[in-house]
Amino acid sequence: MTSTARKTSNISVIIPALNEADNIAATIRRAAGPATREIIVVDGGSRDATADIAVSCGARVYTSAPGRAAQMNFGAQAARGEIFLFLHADTILPENFHRQIKKIIARPETAAGAFRFGFDLPGSAARMIAFFTNLRSRFWQLPYGDQAIFISRRNFNAIGGYPQEPILEDVLLIKRLQKLGKIRIARAAVLTSGRRWQRLGIVKTTLINQKIMLGYLFGLAPQLLKGWYGIGEEG
Image 1 (cartoon, rainbow, N blue to C red):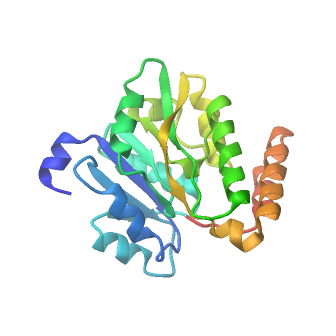
Image 2 (spheres, rainbow, N blue to C red):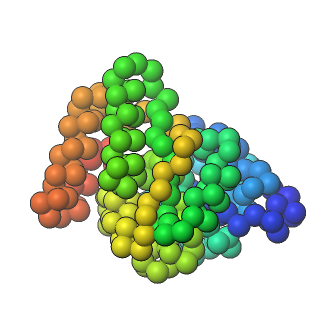
């Protein structure tokens, strides 16, 4: 990222990461460029080369307590841009992401935005999951964190940032933002890793996700819901 880019762009990309050495370079490279003011990686205590790889790719790297909410709030405090783009470490942005972000943020009554969901898994089951995910995010205005949520600094500060919860921090953030305005979904899709779906199986992963959402709706404790998630603290 050149000095000119830092002067003309107002997008800060914030990436929470934990043991993401296999993914972080590709994620940073797609997010870099003249449209990006800075890329901030907040490492939650990786035991691999995540931090070193991120530095070599031009990112500013910080260390914080583990947990996406804590890491993303930390990154937001360090960010200098006026638009925050919260990006998972295993998610690849579309090529024209900056244009769509700025177009959506500039629309009246916009509280925040996100991209359509895309998988790196083949097959009809994966396509069906992506279809229903995009249906939910558009019609319920409820995108998840793996859709790369973007928000103005002003709105982020107005709602107090991410709730300090061990799970569903993205859902809770969006629920707060809905009180400020509309959650808009960009036309382009991110490409997110299907590794968890591969590890647990598509059917099992879907059932776990639905169980967690139902538990949230019935008011169960976040710590209990985190235990259902089943894959530990990953960035």
